[in-house]
Image 1 (cartoon, rainbow over the protein chains, first blue to last red):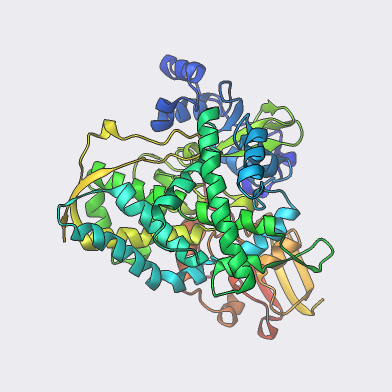
Image 2 (cartoon, one colour):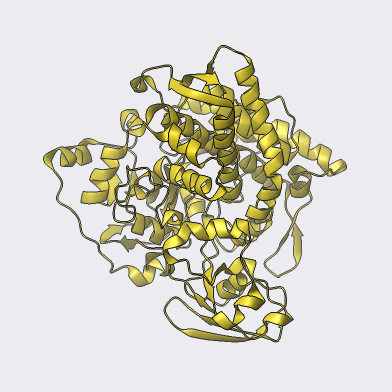
Length: 445
Length: 111
C-alpha cells in the first residue's frame, strides 16, 4: 500500500503508462502548468500527464509534477526524502526570494519563515501545538457560532434586495475572514485589507509573479506583519481568550523533552499562516460551490435534497472538495536522488504534488467527473494533502463549507451565473485554483 | 511507562503486544509511536482524517463503546472498509477498564 510504505522500500514500484492520443501527446509536449489558460482549465493537461508521464518534468516551471494518486500518497508519506521546508522556501517568491526577504526585513518588522512549513522533527513539535486548536470536536462546538456568522453575511446580501451579488467577493471571502478573525481574536471590519493581504501571501507560492508584482505583494505582506506584530504585542501584555493570546504565550516540547516558549518570530509566522490558510482556501471552496450550483445541472436540486441530512450533507461537501479542490498543487523538494514510480528525480529537485490531478485519478475514483457523494472511498481524496503535513484546519474548512451550503439553500434560490461561463477568471497561480469574481443572480427564499 | 496491555494487529497482519501502555494514551498515539503499520494519524488526533482506523475485537466492543456523531461522520468517509466494530484509534484513550484491549488496524480505504 503506497500510503503505508516508505518510498525507499517501494522505489521499485512501477505502474503502467498508457498510450496517449496524438492530441494528448501534443498537450503533454507543449503544455505547462505555468500557462494561465491551462491553470484555468487544467483537466486535459492533468489527464495527459497522469496517463502518459505521471511524474512529468514541467520545463517552463522547472518542477516535477506528480499527478497519480498513488505517487502523491507515497511522496507525502515520506517527509524526509521529500522536504516541505526546502520545497516551500524554493517556491516562495520563486527566483526572487532574497529580495523578498530583504524587503520584509526592512519594511515588515522582519522575515519570518513559516514554522509549520518545516521538516520533522522540528515540524512534529510545532504541528502538535497547532493541532489542538481545530479538532473536529472543537469545531463542532463552534458550529452554532459559525452558523450565526455565515447566516449574517448571506442575509446582508439578500437584504440588498436586487437579487444580484458577487458570490466570491460579497459572500465567500468576507465569510471565511470573519470566522478566522473571530477565532484568532483580530479586529472585525477589516475584510477588505485581509483579503488583499491573503492574495499577496498566497501569490508567494503561486510561481507567477513578476518582480514588480512581487514587490507590490511584499508591501502588502509588510503591512500585514506590522498589523499582526502590534496585535501580538498587545496580547503579550494582556492576554485574552483567543488563539492570538494562545500562540503568543505558547510553549512547545523541545528536543530534550523540556518546555520551550515559541520565539516571537515563530509565533508571528503561525498567526500569519492561520489567518491566511484559514480564509483563502476555504473561500475558494465556497466560491467553487456557487460555481457548481450555477453551472452544473441538477446540483442545486441535489444539495437541496441533502441539506437537512447531516450524513448526506457531509458526503456532498467531501465530494465537492474532491471534485473541485481549492489547492491544486503544493511543493516538495528532494533531499536525495530518488526514483518514484520508475522516474528518476535528482537531488534538490523541486516537485509539485498535483492534488487536482490526484482527485481525478480514475484508478481511485471511477468516473472522476461524475459528482457522486456516495463514493465508498471518499476519504482518500487529497484536497487536504496527506501524511504529516495534511491540512491542519481541515475540520474547520469542512464545517465552514457545510454551513455555507446549508445557509445558501435556506436563504437563496434559483441561483444563476450572471456572466458567461467562459468569462470566469481564475487567479494566476500554480498553487490554488481560485475564481476571482463570480457575479450571480438569485431569488430570496 | 504504564502497565496496561494492548494487542494491536497491524495492516500487514503482524500482531504486536504492548504490555506497558500508560493511562490516557490513545490507540493512535500508541500505534504511531511504536511504528505499527497502517496507523498514520495524519490529523494528529483531531478525529478529522480516518488514518488511525481500527476494528475493535468483538469481546471488547461494549467496553470501548460506540463512536459519537463526529467520529461516525469521519468513519463514513472510508465506508468501503468500515465495519460494525470500527473506531478511530485517536478517540480511544486507554484506561483501567480497557486493560487487555485487542484491536486490528483496518486496511486503507480502497483504490
